[in-house]
Length: 148
Image (cartoon, rainbow, N blue to C red; front, top):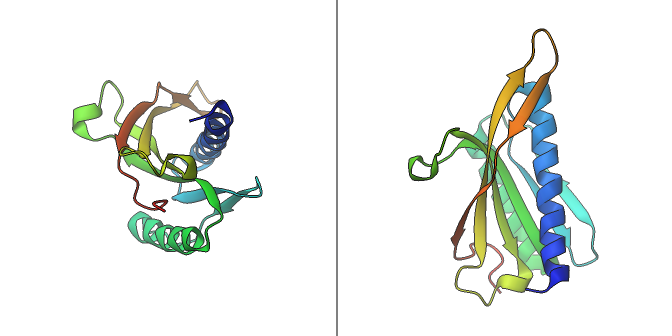
């Protein structure tokens, strides 16, 4: 992967984490959302009003599949507020899970990653809620969406 490809993936991951962090600080949770970097270099954000997280995620997967079929998705991040699987938990179990896939990685056996970003919701006294982020936990696996 070239430095330019790394930078594209890092940029969209960073934006997804900041978006999730802002939503957590405002609401103490966030609904799943999808961020796509298209071939024109534009980031698109998709979300919905479905309250059930599983149904919301499924609708975002449907949007993602249609967009990937169109052929203009360079990098995708599907974000969800979830618990870290037990075998990966260190100190904090709540996380922002980012499912990352990149067009530049489709020829790799392990072409996708989950990044679990552990977080704690904090408040000092009567102050505003803030999110304490911990070091991400990467988990690689074969791509599910951007496969050709």
